[in-house]
Image (cartoon, rainbow, N blue to C red; front, side, top):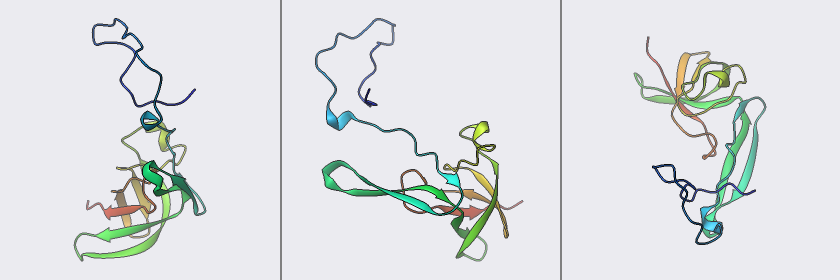
Length: 127
């Protein structure tokens, strides 16, 4: 069955909406990408109006920005420390926006959306 981003089947009161039509292609969604820590692997998707979107399936490098020096560098990810999206993502090494990771320069927080964008950007977290 297709993943739909249309209105829900139930109203706020709990009663059901009457189906007036079937699902439309512009309401289609897709499963979360679940970007993991590992060797670089990307996938290109066709999106609405024939555009292309590159999603990261696995990666081990990020674009790290140091807010003090205002310099950015490409650096390797050592491990996933915490993930506010889901506490079980840490054990599975899944990278999402807001994930705190360990790098050689210290802790960093991911600021981009790995499942939607073709690169992972992060900023150093001062302690």
